[in-house]
Length: 103
Image: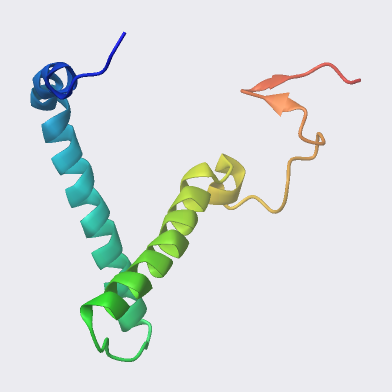
């Protein structure tokens, strides 16, 4: 049993037509996310970027914070978004509109 370069290439190259466009879209989305992080950091009063590496590093750091904030907002309980004060009064036992049996 051996390895050949041509055998590996004959297995990988046909898959590029399927995975190539997805890889390009993911790279574009990542670049947009990093750019959004860099812009947000700059708008919040950060100093001007002195180079591309500083822009990329700051963009990555701010993108992590932005993504965490977006996840928090998207995953916030409906009661928080509706303006209810605090957690539910049933101790969190209510699941999808039905009261769960008390332990």
